Length: 423
Image (cartoon, rainbow, N blue to C red):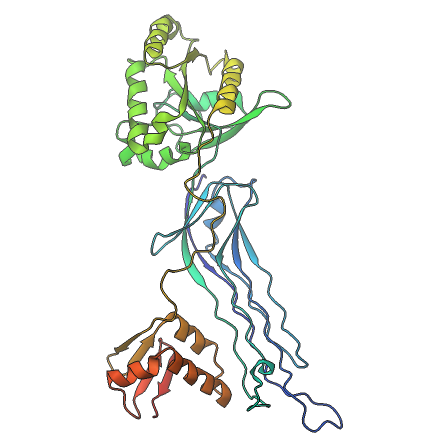
């Protein structure tokens, strides 16, 4: 089954905790601090794999979690960093944050990578907290928390040529005759319910990639017949092959209708090069109408050819013509950078808010202060003093006093850490 949309949960690895330790050695009564740093957590990376052409693998697995870094050890030993978790996606995958719809990346080239969740750095061991006034720091730092996101993935097929036309025009028959693809073929509308991709090998050195899109009908740009879902798959094609049904009552009206639907969906589709092919020349009635149809298309400025997909008549010349058009087609400038940086929020992480919950407790929220709380060893007096200094540096202490905090009041840092206020 062709799957072109998916939603997944991704999470990077947490950084390993720093270690608090003092050197122990025979005949050395006061060894200095030698607690090592924690290892880095693994990044969560999306990587393009050219062998994939659908998002089907995400139907059965929707959670991807990278490994955590290991904690530091004695003798300044740094914990082992975790390996990055690489999740493979097909070329043409657009990555968005589910909740906000923010664009994280547009993955188009084989091997292209996008870091969607960065692994937490390792916490520092007590060696880092030595100072002239504190030669034996009894404090360390927990590893930086992981990042997590819910992602929406959308696939736009990448092909040289997109094949369009009304239902039952013969698009799938042409694809089957031109490539080794095996789309479902029958003589009734909407046989194709999903896009098909095939590679046409003209000779040992020349080939083109073709995408057969399900038949479009009036209103497709608004989603009628799932048309808007299919139209996006031809947005990246360089050339459009427009197949006309020789048995249709009015092939020219069909031609105008499809072009209108494409233009309404995306104005750029109307600007792409088109090769118009009149199909079913093996049927006498259709063959008789060909001169009239060819003349009408030339009046509209379109080059036209004829074929019989059922008998493979004239398939090879059409493929060579398509190849020539692909080579001469202008390279469209990507609206999105080839490699996008990791998406980060524009908000200042040092900002914070103070509110009261239903129990009357003060609740402090903010990116930096909540992250610092997760990295604090609360059982270490030195770590607690560092956190108090950070509260003072960020202006949170003064803000709490202005809000009316008093001795004995409960102050929550986010939803997880409960402190008692003492002046």
